[in-house]
Amino acid sequence: MTFSVSHVERDGDGACLRLAGELDLSTAPELTAAIDKLIAAGETRLLLDLTDLTFCDSTGMAVFVRGDNRAAADGGWLRLTGANGRVERVLQVTGLAEVLHDEPESADPAFRNAV
Image (cartoon, rainbow, N blue to C red; front, top):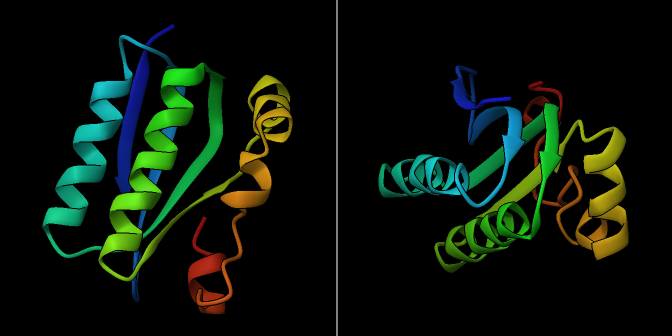
């Protein structure tokens, strides 16, 4: 299966990326580039919608953590929402489900309900 990342237009602060397919060593650079582009454009509040993500390996997990660290360096955050199946299980086992939960204290209700 292929991988895609799309920027979801929304009103308010922050940006949402919708991921689909398999996030692994060969596709992680695409997500890294998308995150870097948003942060370079001044977006520091990032929500990743994982509803259509069917697979994520350790390389993908590292992209999530790196993205959160980059956003945090500028006073923001990266959060995950919509994980299910194997992806949800991996997030739970690794502890990232707790660290990158989809309702940061600083998120406004409109942003949490963006996807």
